[in-house]
Length: 157
Image (cartoon, rainbow, N blue to C red; front, side, top):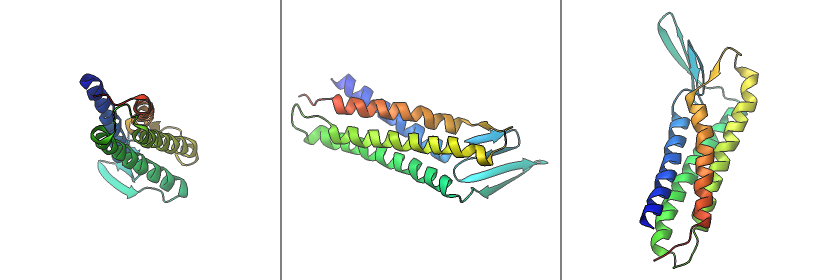
């Protein structure tokens, strides 16, 4: 049982780290001379780097908000798991923890979908998706699977 709990916590922390990295690092879209993320657009011309704030459109603000919400809900889910681990009665299920984690996964999925759909309107075709964008998509199934595991999990002595 201890090994199972350790595995669940490692899966949860892995999803949380991926959410942090994908939200913070400036590599959602890039090419050899520029990169952009949710917060800044950086370009390098003749060895000089300049960074400007990201577009202030409604869609990018929605993506920013959804990614931040996913981090908050995932962190709260981990906190609730440890609280329920010590307060839940024997045989109880971790429904609240699972619900928060599933919400976190749905938030990151929604943010990545909005970014994917709206990306074609303002990004040149020569640019490619960066590793932060890919990490956001990888964090979605990890968070969703850990949320489902929490819902199914029962507390034992």
